[in-house]
Image (spheres, rainbow, N blue to C red):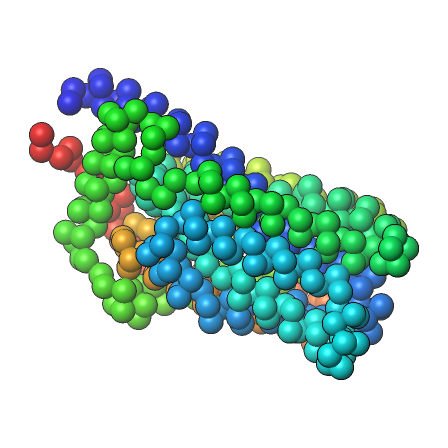
Length: 445
């Protein structure tokens, strides 16, 4: 195949793949993430209705991630075995149903005698089990479609759904909280019901729309399918020539564990802030709708930072410092916010932190996928994500506990900043073989 023909196939094939898969996956993750964190907006009125303390809310918000941790690796291995189309559809259907059931905590508590607090914990655990495997499954799925030198920007586009879910979802959630009285339900109950519906609908769409692998993509020409399959196979051979990992080796690989700790720090800054930012902003004296609107500002900055920083990393071909710098910025922004009393300046600090929190994520996920492939990649990505997401439990719980015992969010925010600094240090000590991300020599004809 001539070089000019190869370039043409690369351009057209990747353009088609990007256009078909990425926008749809962004929508799916948008819905997933909104259903995961909308409890932070519901808390503005739900906590009082259910009689939840800040510690109880933080524990319930975070316990989602314990179940997420337990079921993450098995879920990702099942996805690799059965294919993304079937498994992601199953995940979205189950989490949509459970997210909707959050609206009926008082009813379930009365019917079972468990009480509001225990029922809140139980549904968050089940939601974590249902959603386990979705995010790492998509990260693994993208490795089956996009060559290495495109991954930071593609993961950046996909993960832009995280801050976008707050930029768009926050004001929507704020408006839904005003739906009091309809069918005897409070606004926070309508929030859970209405925001669960898209996940249930999308489950059916996923089943019929996604294609598991390039070789099955009838929407590509035969030449485009051949080029993409050969390109990805050549990259896999290049990684396997350096070291071919088994699933068990990937699970206990020191570098995988190191990356898990880095991700723990990154996730702590994200969720620790996400679940409590609406309540911090509400203390400025704003009404509920303005609180959700102002809370979205750091996430708007995060969207822009995530896309720009991922493209920059791909362009210069550098990963470690492109992960470490935004982690440091996130920690600095959160720490600075604790010494600022002026609401505007505090939100500027949170917005600086928002850039760092989200800009590091797409570049970070190029690190494990650079040296793992196949089932080992599915397992390794799941390990990193599951251990890292334990911070989704630890961060919110610590924030709530410290707030209840000190009357201030300062201690909790400084803890998040400290975890971000530790993550920065760890990522700078990890090795990264950039040769594994260079374009491999063409396969022999």
